Length: 429
Image 1 (spheres, helix red, strand yellow):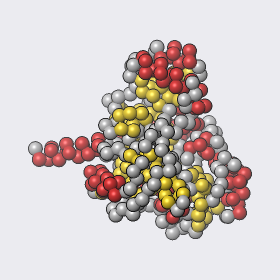
Image 2 (spheres, rainbow, N blue to C red):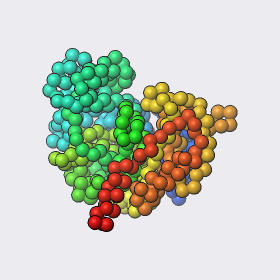
Image 3 (cartoon, rainbow, N blue to C red):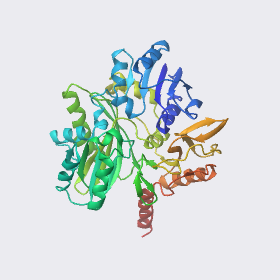
Image 4 (cartoon, rainbow, N blue to C red):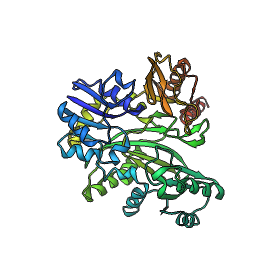
């Protein structure tokens, strides 16, 4: 089978790496891809915003499955047009993609269907947002309604922080995404990421992970697209998974189906584990980045089989995804300046590291050399019997990579490692 993968980041490198292992794969194409993806796929210069060009390519090359990696083409309706032309597609149509494309859409859906989430208010101008803020105690969360590459969330500790956040939103700091905002109550707890394959009706759990959004060690500094992740999130117990499926994920899937817009693809629920139980923080309608890298490292099933079953509405007959009992952890190496203005063109070498898999994200080849070409540049991933072992292996590889204009957090997985140490003390006691 010929497959077209849309995207160019670390998530797409991980998907390409895993798809290339399928015995059903005949030829993998990636548009536009990156230097790392080129090791597994033929790169093609397609613009995902040019739907006609993508459709024409699929027809000329007998594409049996189109996989849309990033959120922007989904929100733009690429999946609708591919499906309209009879091309099996992994990824939701434009309407259900609003779960990620509009935080207000998701909050309103949750309110209508009693899905547990934070109390909220919506505002489309500065005055309305200031009025909404009066209804919330500090700290308070201010979110850009639209797509903001994981950066459109401000946690305001003080009134001054909240006003500065509104300034950033309505002054264009987040582009069109910030023209409308959602103000939310701050939720206390620990965040986890939960993934599920959905074909419109059937829901198959697809593992858990924990991301690290803040740029600095100890969860300090501004939010980013993600500085590292590990899987599985042991704190997300089977009982919690069942509760989330029953109270959050399945009601969302059923609500969209009842609206005549069934969801098909991977549904990623960002959750807060509060004292009152799990509550939805946000939905994404694609694999998380960098969570995808950790999940792919653990996945024992054939990814192509699962994606095709999802695209064809055949998940009810598909076997549940199988994952290794090992843990996997990924450390993001970013260009200095990220999440602001990253330093480009920094040389990268030493990616051949034993005991680790290196996924490329923001990279390019210039003058025969591999260089940084984005904010998050590499994902250094490793497996181990537990998160502590996976962390050691990943950081050994990080230390062997030559990337002087890059940086990373040195504490990815710290919450789970603290739990492992507490468990060890308990056994000794």
